Image (cartoon, rainbow, N blue to C red):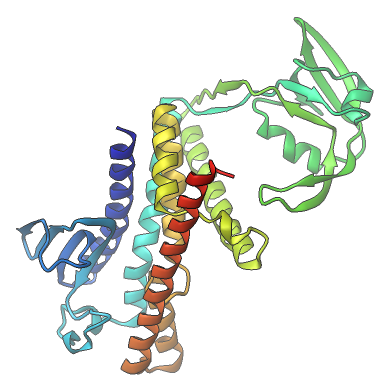
Length: 358
């Protein structure tokens, strides 16, 4: 059941991505010849196809991908280029860029919609309840203990554990902390100190800390208006996008080792586990994968949307399109890179399975 759910989730994310391209292409009058789920690799005909209007909708056996085939666009057969008014190639570079951006944008939009759904299902966050205090830390020195519940810091209400970070980071001097302990309200003074901490990428940084960790309890957020729900979904979408962009940046910089990269097997495995944890968790993971799909497609690799955007920006700046030879060779190189990356991440996935995740 978990594997089936994983495949359905991946297929839905891909369809949404291609749906973005499709709608933008139709908006600019481009004839979409085929909307395909799966990739036509090693097969001449799809398993299933249905002509609906001017577009053929197809299903191919290799599910790890999808495509929108537009009139006049074929990266590997440039003889199919067409300058007809309903052709992709007849459109101005800025119009083609919008068509290309529409796919990644659709993935970001889907993440936003999933976070909206999570808000209505019941968004969970870490409760502001202390699990432990570090020895000789400011919190320990002030008398804060395990199981204390944080209520206010400097007069600001603390609803979730996430509320702490920004307050402590931006603090100056001592913090006035109100806690609940065994049904009693206590007021304490804690002065943060600069200490070494680790980022989610394992980097050592210096930041203000008071030396506490959460107990691991969760609370369900309550939203009082549609505006609060929309704000929550927007903030979560921005957070997810920031995390993915930072992850790509740290990977390029070498901060994150290449052997930590995961592929489809990892996605299927984690999606299966998320399914077992409930609908909200599955939606949250799906939103993160959707953002990941959108961001990665914007990388300037010729086989991806970002590569094609790069070609169109070149045309806008120089007033001439790249030569067919350069375009073809770079596209082939892009596909070789992507297929090699897929093989590498699959190897990492298999190696983790064999070694038990170590």
